[in-house]
Image: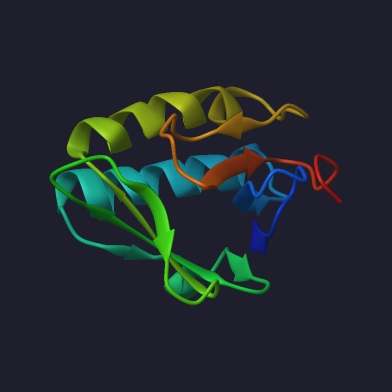
Length: 128
């Protein structure tokens, strides 16, 4: 699984942080790590410290907050995905289909009016 940041992906100042290039097994590992760390232990999940994720040009830290804010950054290198417990629970549901079988589709992991989206994409072909 790889992690990167793509600026102005659509010509309308829409940016994405993307988790991509993974198979069903890595989707399961990511889902389980998210459940255990963020939902059960209520701790931050720093993806730069996850052995099966290779950060390309950025880092993403996921953590609980009192409101769903989505992804925020100050420097376009370190990104913070801050959602409520309900927001992360919904994210798990959106990841679930990728844990059942290998897929070529993709999924945005939250629906928040925010200039940076989080894309879950098994192949790298969506925006390469």
